Length: 90
Image (cartoon, rainbow, N blue to C red; front, side):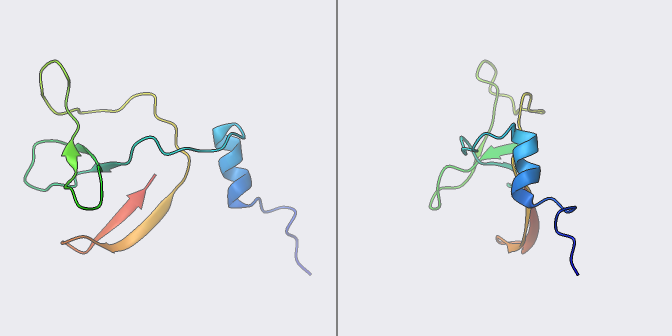
């Protein structure tokens, strides 16, 4: 006997966080991707190009925080990149 009615599916949980709307990826951001950089956040711009540091438009200084971001999914990737890292995708 199983009781599947009690355990919500991943889709139901994500629907609750996103308000039932479908998600769209506008930008993929990595944290600490480039080890020898002062920047914290990096934008992935394509498979063949290295990630670009996210900086302040006026000063060129690296961003230190992100505001107004909506979490729409979580996954873990292992064995990623040159350093065989574990990556948390949000």
